[in-house]
Image (cartoon, rainbow, N blue to C red):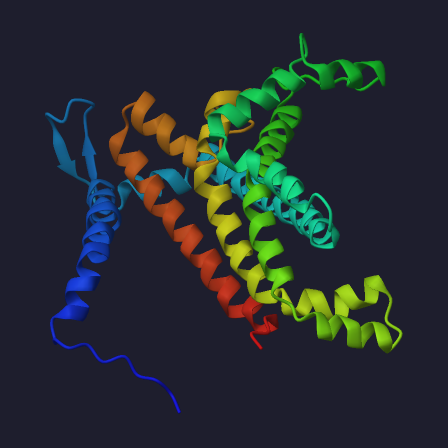
Length: 294
């Protein structure tokens, strides 16, 4: 028998939904509509001259080699951040799930990076890898590794990737640990009785049962890499050197706020949102097939 919630008044469900719907309309749909409208316009920096140009802003973007390079750079950056944020988080969660004594201290220490602002996290990593005063940069020079994110675009890209992934590991760790602790111990004991070793138990029992959590985190981390890494890039490299770390979200800021090209910036934000929506739909279409909810 299924329980059915019955509200005493017909308007009560709508009143309960009204605050969340208002927040969604004001902070999501209205700015999205404004961006879509502005992407069809060409206006000066002060808004005195506004011309309707249709899709001209979009055509100019896709004819710009620098913008196309930023798209591929963003895809590479997002994939690297997602992998480096999820794999260590899963490893740490498995280790925390096995800890008996001091597990609270271990878990609390793992969650501390999530409380740090993205810009602060970026500055911390910048200090550690700074070629002049950074501790890790000094160790790398001692090993004969020439590391200079100020001049080398590849080094700068990996610096913002590591800083962004480190910031997100704590979030993923929390969900992975909750998923691990919800797995019935009887299943693991039965697999151990059947002769399955720790690795075999993980891949045949634990990881399939974690697939809903993994899929959720895959979507969340992809959105994080596309949007929420702006603070790290702005604090560490400002898109440099020579645009080597200029992702799509930072280019939206650079063209719209710094260069005051509002039409192009709005068009870029629309394209960025469309890319994220398409990638999320592809994940639900193909990746979710391997997710087991029972």
